[in-house]
Length: 512
Image (cartoon, rainbow, N blue to C red; front, side, top):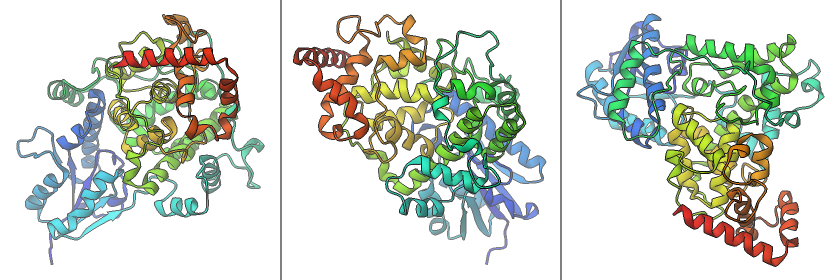
């Protein structure tokens, strides 16, 4: 029997002091292992700012654990013995510390989970994998829910999470205000530009973060993204400061304008908290309780509080459940048979489509775009153009600071690209230029005319929308939520339909 310490690997998205593997461990008899490994920075070519954010947050978290009394063995990316893999780092830590056992919190992705599950046989040491209980719904609970539900619609899952958590519920067990969902109140077009529009806090990089930025700039020079705008919080204290900024200044109007888009305004009334939630610096349930408290104190309207809470305990939890329930083969689904390559401008932002240039440009600058820009601008274009959904998935995983496969993959393949054939969404989220014009000011600054379907000045989204419906008619015509657009399409004159299809074909050919 081994008599060494307990070895507790902590992964880069587990930056929570009471993560499950640490909670009951004896600080005096444990070694926390944290690892910066090349495999995790390059299995897709992550945005430079995303890499810098995670590595700096890890280093600061290690300091926090030490201050709490833990012994931390920290492996840096540029350590000479670092072979670039989790398994290699653990093997060397075993040689250094001769642990009696390994305790680790489960990984968030199938790829890393397979590594953890192989450690016991590889190292001949007992390995305990603790469930990640930072989520409201366990894997078993989701599987039980899914077994009783066809189809697996988020709305019904969300109601169960409301009941389980008690958030925005009345004492008699009914939803606050009498309705479960106030999304109909959350679709206001953008307001006129407001000089008092809230802005997220910008955090000046300290010496450790500056060292990380310099390393990333040199080592990952070929990756997408800029480091010039880096202002992420990298400590829990600063992440909570941004949480407070959101609650004080943005939450009251978040609901009204959560779907709105404005030129050169990447943040609007959004929280900018998802990177901190997904890396473990902010507790999502605590955040939801703080939002609820603002509503009950009369400091935020119900539509804002409910809309935000639904994104966290509804959509975020549901997406995680789908990811683990469906398994690793989900990543290769392609129900619409889309095969076109992702255009080069997804990496440069160099396009005359103003909406796309805005969404991609701010992604390059900030490793951030809000959910409507992702769904209805970059995602909508990829859907309409028939882009290979796996390529779209990899791009989203690369470019956003909050993107981990468990949360990004179902959002991209299911919600955005309809590649799962309707498992997540009841219809494809496809739209022409009229939607973008209604929810943004983008079209007023575009070289294309949003009101034209054909011609050299026609908005590409318009012809692409009808072409998408036409080429997928066999797959989608029986979808009841598409009955109206298909009726409109069939009522068009044959010459008009032909002109639209030709317009779309010429545009798509130009992408190559």
